[in-house]
Image (tube, rainbow, N blue to C red; front, top):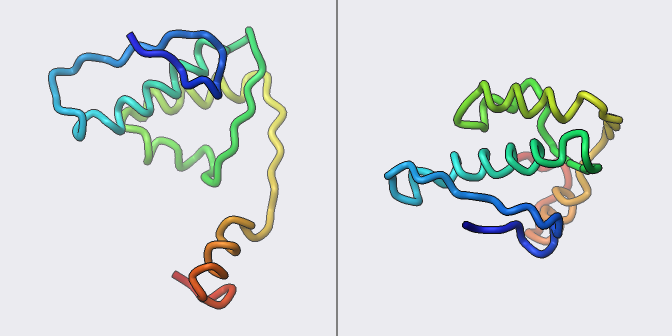
Length: 107
């Protein structure tokens, strides 16, 4: 049995599912399951702060199981205070400057 990293410090043990597949095949599945489990265990018990650069409508495209993505979104927004921040990404701008690319130079 694994546990959350010390930075999360909720003391909630997390079990990795045994799917019989190798780690490379299950990595994305495990990551999605881990996030789902953390949110589910904190749901209606503790606060949770989550940031994302994707709208909820695109979450099913990055989760292996669209049903889990929808259930996760449902738990997240049930008692949520959603703050939408519009504007240019500071991290993207800093990365472009570091690489020597002009701002707004495209991909």
